Amino acid sequence: MKKILLSFSILLFINCKSKSNLDLNTIQKQSNQYTIAFGSCDDQKIKNELWEVIDTNHPSVWIWGGDNIYSDTEDIKVLKANFKLQKQDSSYLHFIKNKIILGTWDDHDFGINDGGQENRLKKESQKYLFDFLDTPKNAPERKREGVYNTKTITVKNHKIKIIILDTRYFRTQLTKSKVPNKRFQPNPYGNGTLLGKEQWQWLDNELRNSNADFNLIVSSVQFLSNKHGFECWGNFPHEVDKLEKLIVDSKAKGTFIVSGDRHIALFSTKTIPQLPYPLVDFTSSGLTHTYTGFSGEENPYLEGEVVKELNFGVLKFDFDTHSVLMEIRGKENKLLAQHLQKY
Image (tube, rainbow, N blue to C red; front, top):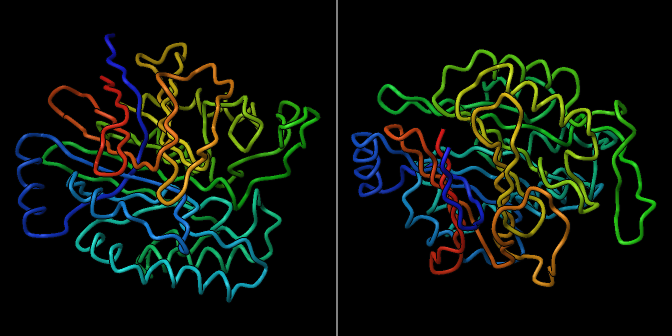
């Protein structure tokens, strides 16, 4: 299978904003194409100058990938106030008009740096995240523990299924690293969980029963890159194996992952036995700030170069060619990297 690889970063959002955008959506549907964008790591105290630029790509969906605010606090009133401050950004309010807004959280909008199931305010945090996202009051995710949810986009006779995971609410204890300059190391195989029993059952059902042309999994933390010593799926190696096996066994078409968290953007791919295409983990992180001092790290799955500029991700789905053009873009809509994946 031929791949074209450059390099890039991600952002995810759905756009139905102005009349011109609505016209574009009609054109996209007629041509069997559809655009989604996503991004992560947006400090509410730093002006986000990318909203207008993101909008020029005419996405139909926007997905928050986590760290949608920065609010490490044990005071729920502070968390609520920080979500309110983020929601008062006039550029953001203009951007989200007539768009589908989806998202998950990571640690800083969850309320605890590197936090997991021990967060005693997680139920309250969940409510304020959903309020920020304008999640309908009767949505299933409002009535259960955890922010995991799904949305299927129908374009003519084609479907894109967006599966949004929660890597915080149920995540058990991490193992501190014995290696200097690394924060964590993998748990002993079989110990602990990232998603928890109920979310795993839900995810199994969503993938096995999917009839979508593409299945997009949103994870706040990276799935493939696993050597950097920070939070990632690799800290629970048995759950990495479990998800890879589920993707293969479910036969869900065109499955790939997008992630955030790291304040850098990159593209990782892995060959999975019996999966007829490479598994992609597309990381886009840094809407308001990035890891400008990044000088490299071990990643056996890295494709292309790591981007450390402000970035967002764009996904361009083509139903005729069964492919997704993935782009990392930055200021002035500069194309920083791209990857074309055919399914």
